[in-house]
Length: 327
Image (cartoon, rainbow, N blue to C red):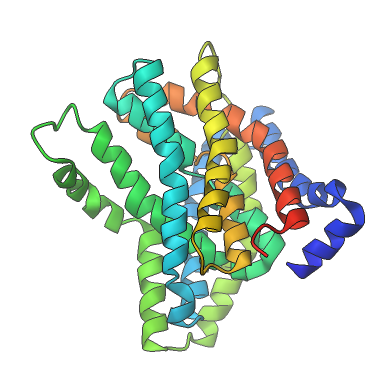
């Protein structure tokens, strides 16, 4: 972090673009490779699944397994990130219900889109470029909040009309088996178990994980760009603008406020949280929306938030490194 700060002090905003531009250029490469049919569109799904189901779980497992348990279980971080995510969730949910007259399922998706970041495909490459492998700790904690709080909350509300005879708690419990099968959650739990038992990873295993790690960042960005091909905004501009504004501006500002209010979080972790919050909405947003008949709308929302995030993330990183709000 000191190196990034020193570089920034010398060249200002241009230094920030030197960090973010290669990331978004690689995304653009993925987009144009698929758009021109140089790379098959169906291959993007395989790459993204490799990143989400193999590469990132392996990286998170190693990051947790090789660290002391006390360093990992950061309760203030979990509380702050939860608070910083719930604020935009309920603001966007209320906007959808009161201003746009949306149903429960649609409003819940508005909320999820406003606070669930593309932490794996976009956030992960950015924070590792800034902080190295130390950034995997806030990434793992962030994914815990998203998978164990925001996603169950969203699905519990979205299923409200269909399962209104059940309480919200019962609805949430019904999706826990699916969450428990999530490779990222499994990797986090296994990593915590290895850390708790103070076990050492075998050298062969570490070498394999090194090979996987070297492929994760580039493939994630390439796939993220390729996934944008075919998405259309259509006549949904008012709704999409609200979600994009909430995701790219309100979410990082709420996260900044939450980490300033809640003490006990290392400055680097807090900065990572704000940067992760500034990432566009996650790729499976459209897949989840499809389950409730809103797949096209959710897919359309990903495009403007991803394109605009190049500017918003660059500005946020520049401001964080310049003003150092967490000390």
